[in-house]
Image (cartoon, rainbow, N blue to C red; front, side, top):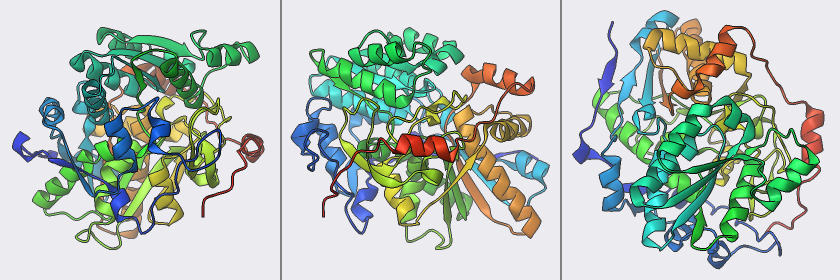
Length: 454
């Protein structure tokens, strides 16, 4: 029983990104200035982002054309295949159809390159010389390093320390593409030095690394900041995933019942799901499932409120599901999902009950990843494995209920640089973390007190 691979040709690449903000019944709650607490203006973002990305961040235009230089680079790996996982279906003895969109075929091995190339392009044409960023597991840092190399920009990456130590070959990949990498918290910035002084063994977090990257940005000339998830323009760039998937599913003659993606900041879930949520042609009963680690349960346990996007309180305040900007999650191996907040667009959809959320401990996630690798051959990144877990569980429910549903998930990245994590799982040395209500409540006490705009 062979898998079915549904391909598009390069002439069928989407020519525009889809902006879901245009289809929301209400505009997103505005970001608030970190100093005044008043709605932030586009000018407030000018110190860290180039003008074209600021325009995309606030846009409610439904379709935004993809520039030709970006499309040209996309053709290095796009369109990506949509694959029916027949061997996994057979192993599970399920009547469900399981498809996965394989974003691991990009040069950096994940979906992150879709926005990295776009952000590098807009910075290049805006006169930026140098980009600063953070990375959790290293997928975003790798993607931006690749993109800046193509556009002749310098790149400095603050990599969460626990991942810096767990995933040395992601550092190698970034260095091959000429990036400079610092373990965060680092002695490179005042922010990092403060965290190291308070806790020399601090494992770091995405919130801390973001603070360092922004501190670096505002202290260097001709430098802008690049973010790999959370913000509206990042969600926008990732919609090439779902737009391709929609065309591929039409060719397969299938209309999905369930869409699945892992979530840290929300970008790969958004990339797959957003083009379908308000699509009149999809099944009205279709479900959209965002999957997060139980060690960092932002959607499933956090409140929906305004919070800072970083630990040092340098970013504008965003209305999102959050565990508190001071939250430092355990050092799970899905480093890209260790973020305290969720994208405002994903948060708004969850608050309106248009999408669902589930969480899993990491041993259950790795069990699913190994099952997938042993049936389909591909080794998922620990982040991606969360989506694999949920897709398998949905397929098992179909078997138990004798329901022939169609499930689609985003295979957001490969796990070739995560084999140390797999070694620990196979040796029975992975621990599960479920963040206690007490710890969550402690982090939430630091939430800023703001008057929400009417």
